[in-house]
Image (cartoon, rainbow, N blue to C red; front, top):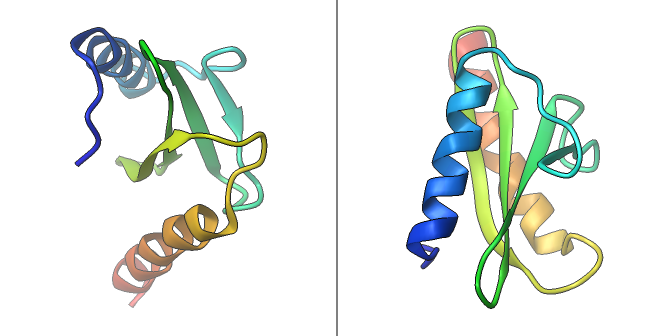
Length: 97
């Protein structure tokens, strides 16, 4: 489990609540992540000594949190992209099947 500071957890909670209320967020808080999937976005949470990313997808009836990681490089690592894609495939198979 990632160790976000209290302030970072509060910011993430605030942004997720805005999404739950139907608000669409854009930069600097969120950006699309088509490298994972067309409907996936990334919340950007600045912490004391780290920059956290929360990959999420908004479905009709849910916000699916896919991956939470500390961003250390300019590009999202391939390992993170692949780790985020797997639960979405599983979710889509369950819902579709």
